Image (cartoon, rainbow, N blue to C red):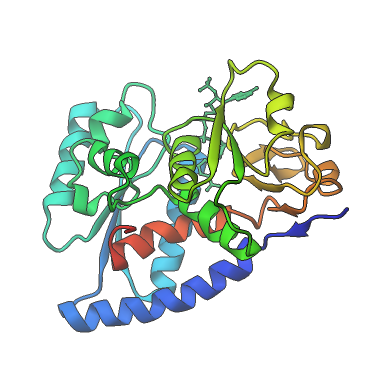
Amino acid sequence: MVANLLDGRALAANLRSELRIHARTFTAAHGRAAHLALLAVGDDQNALLFGQQVIKVCRAIGVAYSLTRYAADVSEAAIRAQAAHASADPATDGVVVLLPLPDGVRQRAVTEVLAPAKDVDGLGPRNAGNLMLGFPSFVPGTAEAVMTLLGQTGLTLRGKHAVIVGRSNVGGKPVALQLLRHDATITICHSRTPNLAEITRAADILVVSVGRPRAITAAMVRPGAVVLDAGINPTPHGIVGDVDFASVREAAGWLTPVPGGLGPLTHLMVIRHTLLGPTP
Ligand SMILES: NC(=O)c1ccc[n+]([C@@H]2O[C@H](COP(=O)([O-])OP(=O)(O)OC[C@H]3O[C@@H](n4cnc5c(N)ncnc54)[C@H](OP(=O)(O)O)[C@@H]3O)[C@@H](O)[C@H]2O)c1
């Protein structure tokens, strides 16, 4: 078997065209373009790359943006105050804190002061809580990208066994909650999970967000399974995912490439949320 590839780039191009229309509608309704505020602390390359990708799309579709940068040694109190200030500004529609933050700035201390209605990355406690409760909420981009690409397979999620490897607040946890909401049966694995391969081999749907290059091999995948890879791991030979693409392609039924799978969709989600509001 050779897996069907789930092409995030093609889907992202369609979504960008849709967002362009929503951006125009927003401008007509409010007399100004929607405005997304990005806060960056330090010089983590992944955080800055994500920010640049968001900015590129904002420019292309007609959403205003601002990028406020702080040195890595800024105090937690200062960045917390700026997050609160940005989200209180009536001319700002969404605020995204670029992650990871440097040591010494706790993510929670910054995201908990964002107004829930402007926390478009869904990382504050109100949105995360609403997601858990099944209420409308802003859902972190990776989880939305997973659901969007799963939609491409045409498979029903009800009753499927979804195994999620990784339990981060931006990755594994919201993915699991979204799949649960769609009636999948979920198993969440992490670094203390024994017999990982035995569990992943039982998955109809396998979502991996661990940050370890090629950690999931073909022997860990049930033939025909849907495999979604959130990993973005720089190597001397370029970016690779958490899934060993070459071997898993011969086993899975559906597979996301890295790059070109979940990544291109993820950064569009904060813009979609800024224009359209929370996921019902
Ligand atoms: N596609 C995107 O747009 C996107 C967005 C965000 C992140 N990412 C990428 O996704 C990857 C993961 O990032 P993240 O922020 O979700 O996770 P993270 O915060 O780096 O945490 C990694 C998770 O993987 C688990 N883990 C580590 N080693 C493991 C092992 N050997 N077996 C099973 N589980 C293991 C950890 O378990 P413990 O909890 O027990 O430590 C933890 O839950 C990175 O490559 C990151 O760059 C991609």
